[in-house]
Image (cartoon, rainbow, N blue to C red; front, side, top):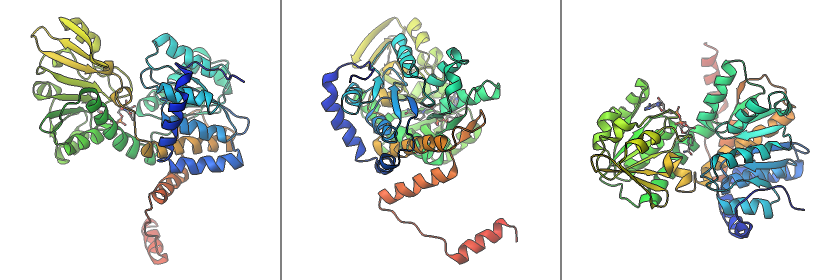
Length: 422
Ligand code: NAI
């Protein structure tokens, strides 16, 4: 039976399988969940729609959900992050309806979200809240009413959903995967840290050692990138708008300055803020010749690309794949990676599987939790239960062969006496 799908090239399936299996080697927590799901079928009969980056790691998540007995549809959460071979393998080897083509245009991107919603899911997984936003905008009185709960993967998505909740317009419960400790402390920090540097290097093959590397935003992602860039021998400067984060950056040993100051000296610039127009024309105009500028925040809004397009006297597309050269009126060139979209997913392969293992274990276990509770939650943004977060940390340590001390009875009593205030 041919399952509904829209992918680039079915002949890539064999390569996709190899990639999915390679990722699975580092996703031992998720594998453990899949093996249990396979026998217990906790998601039997549930329809699940997932709007996530279509990568080898996501493939292992949707395989797990399917093993739990659910019928799954998957679409992309970013037009540039799809791995076409993985999409082909999902359809042809794993029987999972997938709607994603790398570099799809905006209409196709939203058509794919529609295809995912067509079968009236009751659980959704989102990365950036595009699927949930579509449900709110177009299906408030129909499909949205069938949703038991949605799981949201990233910081920006959670911010969008909390805004809906604040306005009293959130139509169903949402679980913030991002706020779980085993998510943002690892995925945002170590995952984004490594994969963003990986994206910059694959895109440019420039040497980081000895360069001045500017990171905008010292949140979980920004601090991961800053640390890795420093480790590669770059001199790292941080820009911030939050005084506490700025202070942390300074005391972690980084230069802290305004974007105006940084623009004059940087060789590499990366935004990781979730904010809009962090690097603007007035900054681009100050930059040195040949600088590399990119973004690793969720949406392609952190760099003012349209302002840059209007200001540049010439634009040369694809100096290298997805590297655009903007020649400024001064004759200096600014190179922008991946059109300002997520550099780690567009230019490299996104986060390593070992870190997505935890994020996606949380996704799978929270879906199971929602089904167990039959979706009986308030229409709010909820945290993942602490017991799930703790279990993921414990099993991750186990798979890494790490054992930790256990509290003695005496220690437990001593600590409890403090919490009781005696
Ligand atoms: P966060 O909230 O921990 O950090 C954002 C930081 O940016 C904050 O410290 C904030 O003060 C700062 N900031 C805001 N506006 C700024 C401005 N104009 N200039 C300088 N700093 C500014 O958020 P987190 O978790 O680090 O996420 C950042 C972005 O990265 C979000 O859009 C998130 O969705 C995305 N993300 C991307 C991933 C990837 O694979 N590339 C993975 C995880 C998250």
